[in-house]
Amino acid sequence: MSKEEDKGMHGRAEEFLQVFKKGAEFTQELMRENERLRYRIIQLEESQSNMEGFPASTDDNRKLFQRIEELEREKEEILGRIRQVEAENQDFAARYIEIEEENNNLANLYIASYQLHSTLDFKEVLQIITEIIINLIGAEEFAILLLDEKSNEIQAVACEGIQRDSVPHVKLGKGIIGEVARTGENYFVEDVSTYVQDFHKPMVCIPLKIKEHVIGVLVIYKLLVQKTTFAAVDYELFTLLAGHAATAIFSSRLYSDSERKLSTIQGFIDLLTK
Amino acid sequence: MLQYNILIVEDSPTMRQLISFALKRLRGIRIVEANDGVDGLKKLSAERFDLILTDINMPIMDGLKLVSLVRNDANYKDTPIVVITTEGAQEDRERALALGANDYITKPIQPNRILEVAKGLLRIA
Image (cartoon, rainbow over all chains, first blue to last red; front, side, top):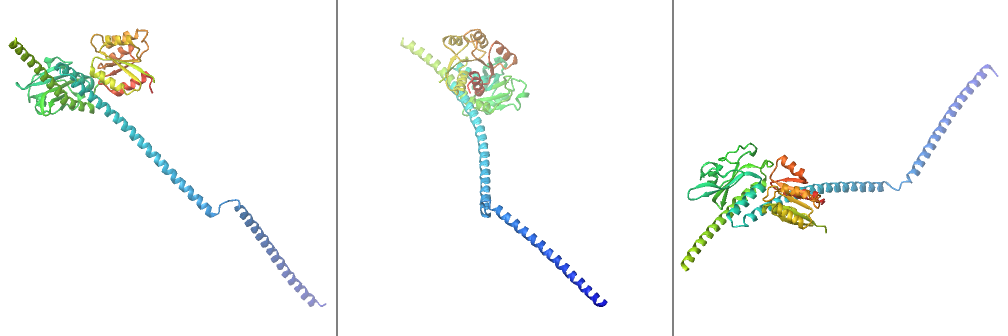
C-alpha cells in the first residue's frame, strides 16, 4: 500500500469515528429523554391515584362551598336577630322602669286625691293638705292661704314650719302671691338651690282653683334638707293640689257653713215649737 | 306560702296608705297599721312581726322611743326596724341607727326605696 492510499484510509476511518460518536451521543440523548418521559408518566399516574381518595368531584366541592356560605349567612342572620332581641330587651327593661315610676306617681296622686276627699271637716282637710305637701312633695316650711272675697285679701289659714303671723296678708293682684291668686297661674323660682327666703316672694306659689275660680294659694318657702330639686311628679302633685285641695277646702267650708246654719235654724224651730 | 307580718307605725293616714301601697307589691305579706308608738307596742305584744316601719315624729310616743323599747325586748331584738322620717340630717340618721334601727329612709316618700329596703331586710329575692 502506497503512502497516499494509507493516508486516505486513515482519513475515512477518522470520519467514520466521528459519525459513530455523534450517533452514540444522539442515542444517549434519546435514552435520557425516554427516561424523563417515563418519570413524568409515573408522576401523572401517582397524582391521578391520589385524587381518587377524595369523594368530591369539582361539582360536589362547589355544592359544599355553597352550603358553607348559606350556613355562614344563616349564622349572621341569627347573630343579628340576637343583637336585635338584646336591644329590645334593654328597651323593655327601660320601659318597665318608666312604667313602674309612672305607677308609683299615679299611686301617690291617687292616695293624695283619695285622702283629700275623705273628710268634710275643714281642719282635717287642711291637715291632709299639709301631710301631702310634707310627705309627697318634701316641703319643710309652707303655708295655705285663702282668699276673702269680701276684702279681696289673701290670708294664711294653715302653716308648717313657720309662724302664721310671718306670712303676709296680701291684696289680690299685689306681689307674687296676689298675682298668682289673680291670674291662677303657678309660680316657681328658676333655681331652687339659690332661693333666699322672703315671705313676699315664695319659692313656689300654687293657686287653689275650682275651674278658673281661685279660692286661695299654697306657698312654699323651704324644702326638706334632702329635697334639693323638684321632680316631674311634684309638678303633677301641684296641679292635683290646685284642683282637688281647692274642691276639698270649698266643700268642707260649705259643709261647715250649712251645718252651722242648720243648727241655727233648728234652734229657731225648737224655740217656736216649744 | 310563707307570710311576712309587717307593722307600719305612722300617725299620718296618707303616709300609712302610701307605705302599704309600696309594700303590697311583695307577695305573701300582711300589713298591720298603728297610729303612734304606744299603739305600735300594743300591736307588737299581740302578735309576731317580721318587719317594723316607723315614723319618728308622732304624738304620745315617738319613733325613736319605740325603736329603743323594741330593741330592748328579747322577743324583738332581731326584728328589722326601718325608720321613715322627714329628718334628713346625718345626726338624726346616726341616732336612729345607734338605737338599733336597721335602715333609715327620708321623706318625701319613694315607694321603690321602701320596697327595696323591705325586700333586703326580709331577704326576699
